[in-house]
Length: 277
Ligand SMILES: [Zn+2]
Image (tube, rainbow, N blue to C red):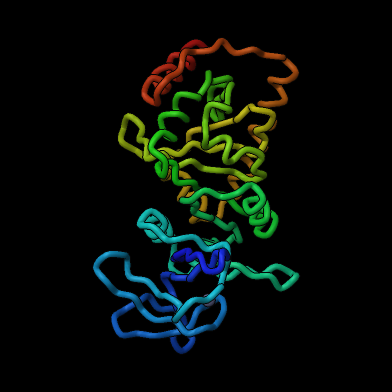
């Protein structure tokens, strides 16, 4: 969506996007079309080349939404999982501040798809602005992230749904460091699949703190179902995790550490764990 240009040492983003307004209608880019930016109202032009997905771009250099990041195929594919009128929604705060949410569902949940690195202050600003939101993080941007995260996954400390995974040393995992102290659910999209081939996310619960990261594998299908249907599952999920964390705290349960494990080994261990219950 945006290209960052260094001009007089100031980063200026050129907003490019999937939708523009043409005579009051949201339209995707088609050759020869021009329209206006739904966020700032400036003129935008359809860019329909071979190299990038077709998109709209502002004419000339313009600061539109400083939070917008360059759109990748990964972004576009994710946004396309939701109805068109939920994508690229201008979200207003009471103060009049506005930003373009990647997806805003009918129930008001904002889903931000984050590919590039985000400074902690900027992340917090967005979480404060949107309030009811989740992040989906591209865990394949850096080569080692996926392997690092899977290696850091500790023992399963609670069986049967919802179960959680306890990560003992988040310092070894760059993704956990990047998203440390996030106050909303974060879904790491590592491109990992379960044994049956179904893609799965790792959901970091916001209760994670002090180096303890509470992660749960969540299938991509259930993530989409929950947010397409506007179910209040994030809150219920987090409440479930809180109950378990509190029980663990009271019981001062110390899980027996498993050696570092990949996803498939984890699945096998989860089964054997359940059999022991
Ligand atoms: Zn604009």
